[in-house]
Length: 340
Ligand code: KG4
Ligand code: ZN
Image (cartoon, rainbow, N blue to C red; front, side, top):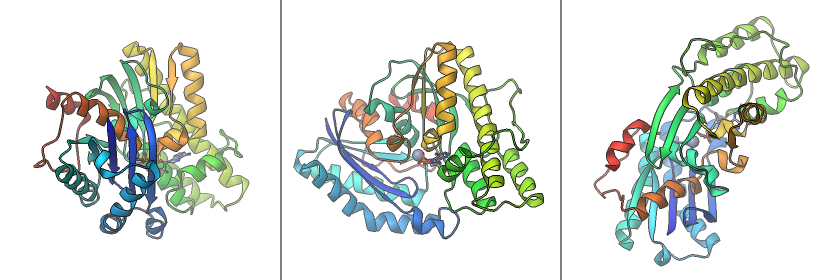
C-alpha cells in the first residue's frame, strides 16, 4: 500500500510516504529540540503548539518530496500513543481528517511498534525475535512473535536509558538532549576511570534501573566538578556509558538465554550509541545470535518506521475507527487482545 505516516508523540513533527511497508519515498522530520533546549527538557504546551504550526507544512513537504498527490494515498498510519496527549492529538487528528476526507483507512499504532520495526525498512527480520528498545521514554525487553504480538520480558523500574543520558548530561552542564554528546565525549575517555554502580545487575530479573546511576554521577560531580571540554568530563562520560552498556548487555544476554532467541533487534534513539552498538555486536557474535540495529538515521523518532506495522495492519483489515482517541499510556502487551 502507498501510505502516509505521521508521528507527533513528543518533540518531532514527522511525516513520511512509504510504499509497501518497505520503500521510503520521503521522510520529513521537523525537530523542536532547539526550542525545548532552553528549558532543559520538553515543555508539553509548547510541543503541542509547535506541532500545530508544523503539521500541515510537514505533510505537504512529504508528499512533494515523494512526488505523490493526496489522491494516490491508500491509507494513513499515525502514532496513537504513548506520548504527550496534546502532541499526539495533533498528528492523530490530521491523520483522521485526511482518511475521512479521502475515504481511505487509517490505523493508530504504538510508538514503540514503530521503533521495533525501523530496521525492517532496511532488511526484514524473521519472527520470533527478542527486542531491546532503548529511548528517552523506554528501556524494555520484548519477545516479539509477530505484528501486534508482544510480551514484555523486562523494563526499567524508574528512568529510561535515554532519560538517564539526558539527566547526566544536564548534571555535567550540557545542553538538552545530551545523549549524543556524552557518546562522543565517551570515545575520548577511560571507561574505568570512575567507579559507578551497575544497578540491578544481578537481581535475577530482566528489569533495569538507572536512577541510582544518575545519583552517583550527581554525587561525583558535586565533589569533583568537571569542565567541558576536559579529560575529567570525557572520563566521566566514558565511565557512565560503560555502566549503562554493562547493564544493558548483561540483561540482554540473560534474556537471550531465557528465551532461546536466535535473533535480536535493538531499537530506539539510544540505539544510535556507539558503545551500545559495539557491545551488542560482541554479545551476539558470542551467543551465535543474528543482530539487527537500524541505521542511526532510523533509530530516533521518525514517521517512516510506523509504516512497517501500519502496512501490515491495513493490508490485513485492521483499521482504526474515526471515533478512536489517543492514549498517553499504552501497554504493548495489550495490543494482541485488540487484534483478536
Ligand atoms: O527514540 P527517541 O528519538 O525518542 C523517544 O522516543 O524517546 O530517543 C531519544 C533519546 C534521547 O534521550 C537522546 O539523548 C538519546 O535518545 N540518544 C542517545 C544517542 N542519540 C540519541 N543516547 C545515547 N547515545 C547516543 N548516541
Ligand atoms: Zn521514540
